[in-house]
Amino acid sequence: MHNIRGTVDQPLKVAKDRETGKEYLLCDYSRDGDSYRSPWTNTYDPPAEDAQLPSEKLRKLEIEANAAFESYRDMYFEGGISSVYFWDLDHGFAGVVLIKKTGDGSKAIQGCWDSIHVIEINERSSRQVHYKLTSTIMLWLQTNKPGSGMMNLGGSLTRQVEQDSPVNDQNPHLVNIGRMIEDQESKMRSTINEIYFGKTKKVIGDLRSVETPAEKEKQEEIVREIRTAVAGRNSAA
Image (cartoon, rainbow, N blue to C red; front, top):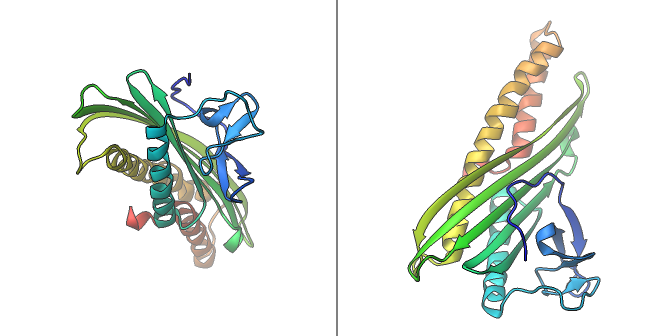
């Protein structure tokens, strides 16, 4: 039985499905001993006997969720890797949505964004469900531009939210979960912009004296590029 943990502080690792060739993300929730389950084929690598698998009904939802969050990832992150895993609980089920986006190093900026959304679903009745979402975002950035030198920026942010929602044909589990994660990640992205990048300009100013308008413009450009690199299509959120 998986334990629902509130924090995740390890960067997400990547593996490749031997059958499909598609990449997927590893985490403790998809682990059985030294083996990890692929969301694409529902098999463990290395193969593991008697390893835990989701029920047939939950596996169907897992397949739908992986397809949905691939679209979500492409829309908000313009690429990257995503994986969704579900597992059964006594009074419902739980899952984790993982998203990883690594910068390509263009414009002298390298970085990595990891999103980990752990969702617990308590099916209190056939029509009303309690959702508990714990989201963690881990961020690392490095910029190295002529005239400004190298700067490293990193950290993590965790938020939790709970809500009761109806479950019906118009609002199935996947829609409710998707809305919660989209809203939570949007708020957290804004918070990260405010906490990290709002202070980046001040940090640069404190650490490097500004003597000319040209130097000041270079520093403004660094802040803009870092914000753009991490926020992705933040305007779409």
